[in-house]
Length: 100
Length: 409
Image (cartoon, rainbow over all chains, first blue to last red; front, top):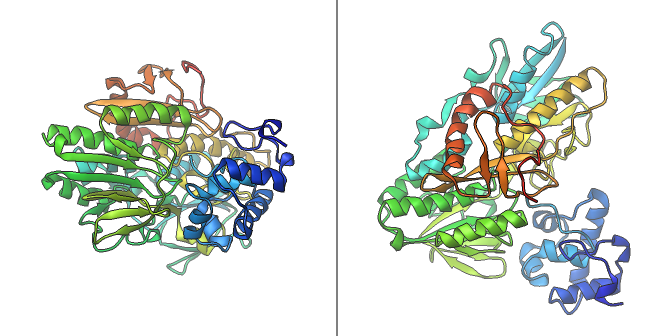
C-alpha cells in the first residue's frame, strides 16, 4: 500500500472509511510525525472510532478527556500539536466538526 | 388548554415568544416564558465597552419590555427538565408542564474550566469581555494602562460570536493608536485554531488584516493553565506566552440545567436536528440559538435566521404536519475593524465566507471580506435593528437561508 492508493478529502483525511485498517493507521500516523502506535495511542484511536460510529462525528478534546480514560496532558503527549485532529486522521475519520 | 413553554428569555427565546404570540390561538394555547434575570443585555455591544465606545447603559433594557402584554412570565432559575414527563422543575419549586417545549437557554463563559484563570489576577490583569462585568472592568483597566503586552487568548472552540476576538484586537489597534501609545502596546492573538478564523478563505484574508495591523498571531495554542505569578499562559504542550494584560475567551458552555437534565453533550449543548431544530431525542422539544449543538456559529444573527425556520416548524408540528422548513446554517457577521471601518462575512453550513458584494434592498450593497466604512455603518445600525425589529420578531430585509447573489466563488 502507498499513500497514492488511498483517496483523501480536502483536509488530507481518508475519503473512504472502508480504506482504513491497522496498516493504513500506521501510515497516517507517520504523516503526522508519529512513528509508533503504542497501546495508549490505540486506546484513543479506538475510542475515536467508537464515538464516530455512534454519533457520526469524531469527539472533541473535551469529550476525549472526559470519557477515553486518558487526560488532556497525556493526549497532547501522545498526539503532539492537536490530539483530536491528529487522532481522527489516524483513525481514518474526517476532521472533527467541533470548531466553527 | 395546551401549553407552550419557552425556557430562556434572551435573544432567541424573546424572538420566538413574539413570533408565536398572536399567531397561536389564545383560547387553545397558553404561552409561558421562564428566565432567572430581569435584564436583557445586547451582547454584541460588550465588545465596544472596553474601548469606551459604549457604556453599560447602551447595552441594557428590561426583558419585560420585549414580552407581549399578557405573557405568562416566570422568574426563576431552572432546576431540570424531565423530558419523559413533559415537565420542567424550577428552583422556586414550581413545576411547569408542557405540550411543546422550546429551549433557548443559551451559552455562557466558564472560566473555572481553565486552571488559574479565575485566580488572583482575575479582573486585575486578566479579563473577559463576554460578560458585562468583565467588559466594564476591562474598560477601567485600559483607561489608565500605559502599555505592555496585550494577549488575547481563545481557550477552546466553539465560542459565541467567533469573530468577536478578532474585532477586539482590531479595535485595540485603533484605540491605542488614538491614545498615542500604539508603539508601546504589543498585541498578540493566541488561538487554538490553525489560523485567524475557522473557515479557510476568511482565515487567510483576516490573517492578512492581523499582519497589516501589526498584530502577532500564534495559532494551534491550546491553553492548559495560567501562571499568575509569572504572568504567562501555558499550553498543554508547554508553549508559553507572557502577558501584562490577558483578555481571555474562556470555554463556552450551555446552561447547567441542561447537564442536570442529562440532555447535553460534553459542553452542555443539546443534540438538535441541524435542519429542523427539533430535539434528536424528543419530538415535542425544539432548541434554538446558542443552546443547540449545531455546527453553525453561536450568534444573534444565527438565532434570528433559526427563529424564522423554527416558527414555521412549530406551527407544522402543532398542526400534525411534517416539519418542512430547513435551516441551512446561515450566519451574517459585521466585523468591526477599527478606524470607522468594518468587514462583512455571510456564510452557511456548506458555503464558507466568500468575497464579493452583499446586496441588501434599500441599504446595500455591502462589500464582503473587505474593509469599508459602509460595513461599519451596518454594524452601528444593527443595534437599532436589534432592539426595534429583531427582538420583536419583525421581518428583517435578509433571507433566512443564505443567497449566493454577489458572492465570488
